[in-house]
Amino acid sequence: MVRLAIERKRDGATLDSTTWEAIVAAYMDGTADDAQMAALAMACVWRGLDLGEAVALTRAMVASGASLHYPHDVFVVDKHSSGGVSDIVSLVAVPLVAACGVKVAKLSGRALGHTGGTIDKLETIAGLRTTIEMDAFVRQVERVGCAIAAQSDAFVPADKRLYRLRDHTATVPSIGLIAASIVSKKVAGGAHAFVFDVKCGGAAFMRDVRQATDLAQTLVAVSHEFGRRARAVVSDMEEPLGRSIGTGIEVIEAREFLRGEDADGRVREGCLQIAVEMLALAGVREPRETALGALQSGKAYEKFVEMIEAQGGSRDALERMSVTARAHEVKASHAGFVTAIDAVALGHAAREWSAHEPTGGIRVAMRVGARVERGDVIAVAYGAHANAKRVADAFAIGAEAPPARPLAYATI
Image 1 (spheres, rainbow, N blue to C red):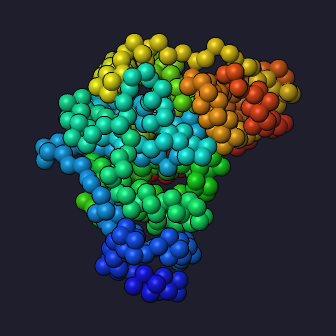
Image 2 (cartoon, one colour; image 1 turned 180 degrees about the vertical axis):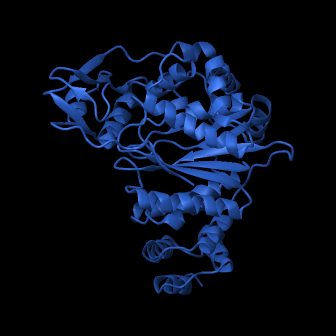
């Protein structure tokens, strides 16, 4: 059966839902091996999946494991980012939306490649637990209003197996397979509405706007087939979203943002946009004003603390976090404009350094488009293992300012 499905997909046929269910079941019970699934995945990369196929594969993967369920009178939202550098949106938007009275359930992953992982970041807070039993996770969402936890192995095990295989066989870049992977985890997580932050650019998995928009549209369409409300934002990832890159150093930036102490304009708008979309899906009137009110009143920060305490951390542990003392200033070698920042290189470097020191990493002082003079500080590298030259090499400085780029290219 699987061999026939491979042949049909290879030749451009559409596989029906019964076939996709049988394929996933065969892969999970060992009837279909990795070689067959790799061949099928490559056929999907070349031939694509239509909406019906993406929905069928999503449904089959959800059925391969456990799912969370909330009481009928509890409306829950979730958000997903396709990966980026200095992406603190989950750390900010989850407590911010919860502070506005909307329940948020966030199952997150760890770092992948140059991109940071929300779970890795939260685990730099002393005592905080990210592994939470399903029943306890549901109760926390109901009681506190939000929770961020690591994805359990009980959820969509078929996706975990298939994703590892796709990673090893260079078959990740298929919009249908990507959408099925993402939405299956969201559906299993039990939320009633999703906001997808689809990153686009040199530091994202989707490199161009057209490709990212296609993925965003597919994510929303597949979610609707499962009766979920959904929106997607195609956002820029040609440079780091925030100014801090690492694990604990990004928690510190989120803490300062929520306390109103520091708010880089780019990351502020990115966080607010996702939070506003989440609130709108939950039916909140004037969502932007509501979100700004929760930030300015301090309610969002207090909700962040409440979530941390519910998961074993403490206010004191959060507030005592500080960037590691050893700092290496990175200065401009000549005058001009910052024309590009290699966020991939910075992401890899910060991930290495924060593995040795949780609050080590990088802080970006100059954005793309900024005018700099020779000797101006363009970034600071923190930690005993930090390398200033490695950071300097990630900045390009030219004679002319580059064209301005929007933070968000589209909302679907």
